Image (cartoon, rainbow, N blue to C red; front, top):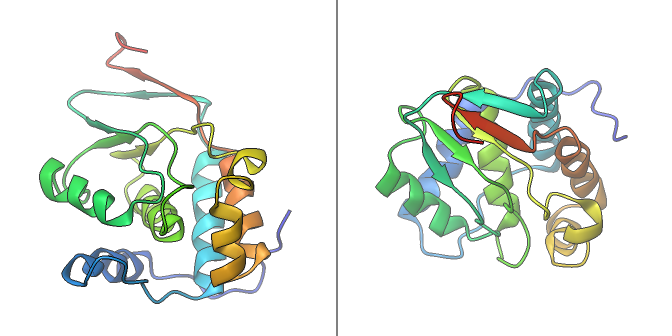
Length: 173
């Protein structure tokens, strides 16, 4: 387990605004973030996940989305077309990291949104939210190249607490 003691509380609203503002930048822009911010957001998400069941229950209407795979600008377009996550309810179905060049931006934004909007923004664990998978398919290498292995470990720790299924309006599993 990664130690996250003695950090200042991250301003989640400012973090979300900073990451979301990248949509006005050219594709490929890396959002400025620190290692400490990323570890903090991972552990804040872990705290939210650890308080919920592996089966979450949500009510319609919801927007469903899956397989972002590190395509950060596609994620921002999802919010443009589906609705601002601050006012629209979402369930994401996993596979947030790997393959794309900006898995860190994707998972950091999604975790921050989950932390900020726990009643209307939900994340399920996909097979790429596993250290054995994302070590092979790119997330580990991205974390190591851009920050450190500590960042990867913090996110993997949070992945271990993510729910794996959702029941929608007591009808759809």
